[in-house]
Image 1 (cartoon, rainbow, N blue to C red):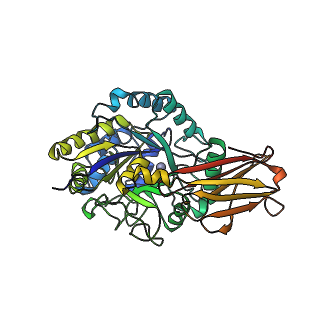
Image 2 (image 1 turned 30 degrees about the vertical axis):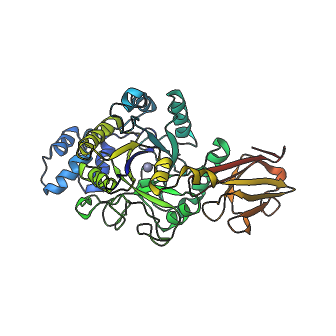
Image 3 (image 1 turned 180 degrees about the vertical axis):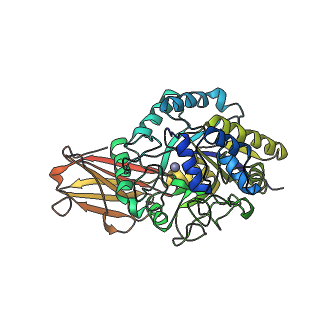
Length: 452
Ligand SMILES: [Zn+2]
């Protein structure tokens, strides 16, 4: 008889801080998504919620989910988010439904920075570097939640730089993207290892960008044809969450360099995630069953679920746990475990602890004269080059390419009049992941020539 695999339940939160929306904003959004033109009144909202409008049933259903009191019940300020987190990050909530090993719920916080946007911020997002990162660092420490980790999330900037409008182009946002990475690395000693695609959207430019630095990518929101949203302008015909053709059986895959949705020869690994109580592509009993069937056949399975910190997460987690218990009872032989994402990727891919430790990336980073040298001592970098960031004494942050000495092994960078003279540099940082999800980071202070 086949030994069952384990279903790893991995909860990814797109962590964006508070989100405000008044009734005018809500009706504007409904107009854009569904083409509904109605007076923005609470009476009309109630009509939409009760489905008392003249339109086809399938459209009515999608609208009623979009205006459900839960869906539009946003956490409007940090106090509301803090109140929620202090409820859901405690052992009593985490252990309400423990996993097959007695473990409690685990959170993977994909933290973004709202930077690069203009003054048009109708939904009152918290603008600035590190605001959300610092809040979650504090709350994780304060609640002693060492099992939870902070990960990566980025929103590309739209043409008119509105903070509430979705966009997909990394190329159009590239300087903002590197500013965020440089500051996280230099100010916080932090480098991303797991990506959650902003707006669930990947394209050719983000596909290539991610492939350079980040080995794990739980962003595949593919659903079977019958579950595709049909009436939401931002979600049909490949707008935003375009995962058409990607696996829907919970398998991991290496994408193609030419198409992120299909299997190919890129190095990063994409996992599937589904929404929790959102207006499209939600997790369901049927989908959880698919994961348990796959595990019953002997595979470890990565079951990703995702939501936002600006909605009531307790309701969404409780709903998921109810479905999970129903499925789990049907498959008593299959164990499930709540997991941190890096750990779940490793277990699902099949890396052993020994392999991960024996090949753990180590680089030698040294500054000789005006030249920074980076040499591989152990393991192998993910992607073509380590990430280089530096900060000048006047407070500017920069990223640049290395000069390649031996590809994949040895790199250098010269600080002089073609770049920035070393005398003007306050701090240099070098980071890289390996394919196992080990992250290597070194900081150098050129004045002291100290490495740490
Ligand atoms: Zn997002």
